[in-house]
Amino acid sequence: MRRKDVEEDEKVDSDSLVGNENSQIEELEMKISGLEKELQYKEADLANLRQKSAKDRNEAIRFGSSSMARKIMPLISNMEAALDRSKENESEGLSEGVRMTVRGLRTAMESEGIIPIDSMGKEFDPTRMEAIGMIPSPAGVEPGTVVEVVEEGFMIHDRVLRASRVIVSESAEDE
Image 1 (cartoon, rainbow, N blue to C red):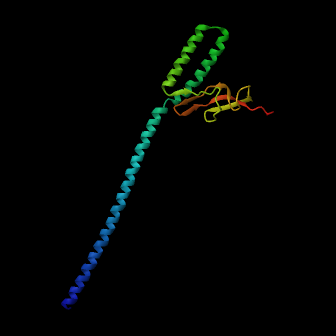
Image 2: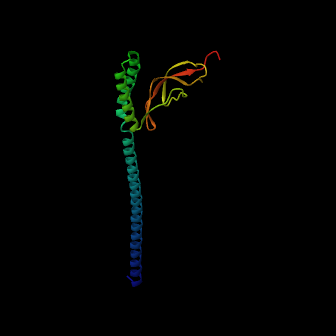
């Protein structure tokens, strides 16, 4: 073989090696780029998980007393009903004791962010109230107004724990 032919063969072999190395480098750079993107996604997922966890923890703290409140609300209603009935019997000592207990329970609930829903005389709000009956509008009362609260409702912060059960005025049919 001639020297020139040998040199050309070596040049072709070295060019193919360089070309092969370049394609391997490009392939590795693409893999690195893909792994960097995957790492960024994982970091974003982790940050989102931390935020969700913090939000869930805050909500658990904020609304943690909901279960206790649901158990106490019927007791308050029953005690208030007992107070109403005791007015007829004039047992003042018992009435005052029940009144104090109701006030204490309400204060404890309010300290946890649990407040009664103000319904009487207000426009009916289906997100906070449950209409259990309707009566014709009394004189001077707009239709759709709460005319009687049968069972008081409660909210904890911005959530309804128990809807107020109310009777709502409706427009007279002869109008």
